[in-house]
Every structure is written in structure tokens, then in C-alpha cells.
Length: 338
Image (cartoon, rainbow, N blue to C red):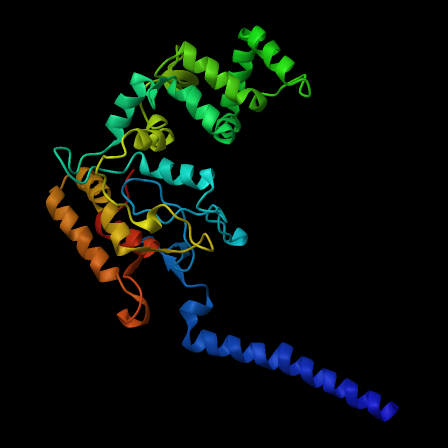
């Protein structure tokens, strides 16, 4: 018995030494000797020599002078890698895609070829008719209850605005409570649909949006006001505008521009996606550096081509660019924008 136990103990010690000591030590040594860059996380440094991120993990870029990555269901959090898991039939997915398309999609043909659709969305919205019926905002809330409630929860100022509306419309709230006796003390989110229905009647062709003005003390003050155009109208109502204009010939948008990856952390975008963003990026750098727009665009396009590659040396898949690497090249060439 003692002989068997001693052999088992020796085998255990031997296994622990090999599996927990020698093997990982050998892997660490080989990695740092021959693959140091990869072993240390594939970290990239900016022009100042400071680490700005890993080439393996996407990070958000929102400024116009930079190429932007794919949307991320994980909010680009490497510790929360995830996909959206939204089915094609899910209206939340349709809304997210439509929200991204509203400000950027352009006409493909006709007299307006190359022009943004966004101004036409605003003009259509101000007419306040959808599918031939009035009150666009009310119809939007009725069709998408969840989106209406999400708007209220998106910012504390939205909830406060609805609370103020409820105090000023006590009769309407009382009628809502009668129709929903299980919720005698409704929260702002509970009143989302009836709020938007009432708002639409009182403010036709308008949507509640944050507006920043200079106060009496000279400081900026933000409040919710009815607006007829701007960054809330274009994305929120693109889908409804599209349904009212099914024959409009619009440019195709690269799929990876509006869809998330399985991990939510894909650092690459297709070259087609990058080319779609090229005009915006080049225009911003040209304006800041006071250089010729055409020359700047050509330079940035060359940066894209130099950094583009396809899997397996081009034998499979589409050409891709690493967003962080390309944006670092822009920083190196043109400097940082204030």
C-alpha cells in the first residue's frame, strides 16, 4: 500500500512540475524570445511612445478625423466580449442599423446622386405625415413601445422632462391610470407612449431633443426642447422615411459598418467600409491642416492600400484594415487635432 501511495505522490509531483512549471516556463521563454510583440499583447504605441491599445482588440473612435470600427455589442469592453444575439426579425436590430444609416446614407442615382439623404428626412419629418396619416412621433411611439421607453431611460434629463409633462397633464395621466389600474403610480417610462402621443399633437413635426444654449451667466445650459431637425431626427426616423420612400435609389452601405462581430471586439473593417468613410476622414484632415482636399484624400487612400491585407496572404476572404493601425498612421502623418 505504502509503495503504491509513494508512486502516486511522485507521479503527482512530476505532473505538477511538468504541467505547472516547466511547460509554461518554456512557452513563456519561447514567446518572449521569438514572438515578443505577440506575447506582450500586440500592443501599439502612439507617436509619443505611449501604449494606445492592442491591435487585436477594437476600441471606439467617434471623431470625424478617424476611421471608425464596427459597432460593438460589448461596448468595446475586452472583459465582456459578446455579440448582440439579435435575430434579423428583431426590431431592435432594425432600429440600430437604421439609426446608423440615417446620417450617412446617400442617393445612388438621379439628380441627387452622391447627396446625403439626411436633409430630406428632416423635410419629410417636418410635414408630419407617415403612410398618409398625421403625427409621425405618435405613430413611432405606437409602433415601437420599447424604443419610446428606451428614450426616456437614455438620459436623466429625459425622465425629468416627462415628469414635468406629467405634472402639467394630470388629467391625461389620470386617464392612463384608469386604463392601467395595476400601475396606480406610473413612472416616466410607463408613460412613454402616451407622452409621445400628446407631445406629437402639441408639437407637430417636432421631437423632444437636448438643446444647448448660453445662459445668463455665460455658461452653456442644456434643456429638452421640441426640435424639427438635427442629429436626433435623422437616425430616429430614417426607417419610417425609407418605408414612405421605397423607390428612392440609395447607395449600398458595407455590411460590417452596421453589424457587430461575434466577439464585439473585431479590430478590422473591410477596405470597402474604410473607403466609405474616406471622404469624411479626408475632409476633416484637409480642413485642419489647410491642405488640398484632393491631395489629402489621395494620401489617406494610399495609407489604406498599404495597410490592407486579406487572410492567408490574399488567398481567402476580403481585404481588411486594422482600424487602430490606420488611425495611428494618420496621427503620425498629420499630427493630433485639438
